[in-house]
Length: 535
Image 1 (cartoon, helix red, strand yellow):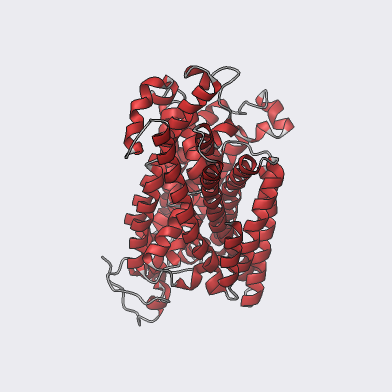
Image 2: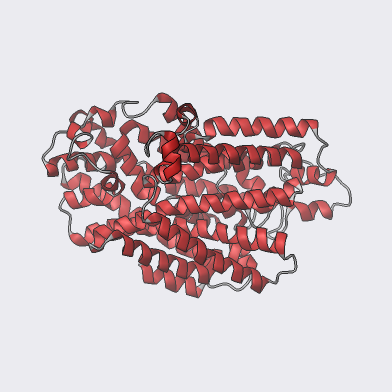
């Protein structure tokens, strides 16, 4: 499987920026939908989602609700409009919409931060699965998996990554559904519809699994779901998929296709979690409550690989367990690919080409992009040796950041033409400070000695009430409305944006079709002063 990814990367290798960042804008509806599904369903979805449901019960459903609902918001409000704006990267949109190099720099920094935090969870997932499959230590497995991933990405860029994502989607969905059906049928849990039949297990599992708000508060559930919904709409590696298609119609339909492909896995994840929890208790000969409390309780690492463990506990053939594990690797690699491409474009295109060296050639940009993939890959690999949280939680931190800083800029930038540069800068700065403050307050005391001393211990928060209402995993519940308010208020008291910018916003809502390589900016520039009609 890993060798095939390298071969596809070599076959579709690129030498220009159009292929490197947006796959030549020639990807079709179904192929882009599969790429969206693979790009989206990371180790956090394939492994972490079932793990979170297994360890946290009802709280884990916040992740399914949040990650799914976010795509409806994307479909209705952003997909077609982003494609009509027609840039290379998410920071490109922010810079051109708000006429500000500083806004570009802030968006590029946020993109890099999201890619880094998000990828740590994927690298950890690859290592855990490799550990269970090959029986080796997790650290060399992380190094090997990340080396292969970085190798094919540096070669192929977005074009090869998209082709690989379609293949990776087929591998991961076949592996996951085969695992759910095989475990359910062989252990007598289910027959033809395990996605519903697993409900019959509830009476045999601990109340911590099935009863709402046993393991977490109502506020944390709402904050997490909110952050995931709007974080989905602010993730650069998700939004850039709409730049790779031919037109806005294909962008909308590829979102629908992607939702269908994602639904196939998300609908089955709670069933796999329930099967895994019950089998964990049976194999270890412990009571349902002992799965969550006591010396033999399920650890975080075991929860993160419950999908693979369930197949092992069910005594399925070794090759079949390997197939289930291969799906987890495919999921992690596909998402890491999307994240690294957005990180490399943020550095090579948005920072190097647009801010440092405007005369950079395409060859120079591609080289910088490839170097960025290697550097980010090395940082992610080292961090994944000892990550600060479970896979699903790490990914949720990135969603919280995207929902707080970038989503308000995309939404207001496309739907309110009076949003201006000053408002965008104030809003993005507010969102960044709020999220970084949340991480410093709640996460870093576990790693930095003097912060732990201030907090009163490694597991404590520096300001407990801030950690309670602005947790890193759900910071967007407070942060997103606050960034909206700051952006709108500052925009209202400062000069309106130029008329050209307002025309570009209206062009994003025009019913007139656009060409494959056209952007809103080009149409407005060639309109001869006419104002585009919007819908």
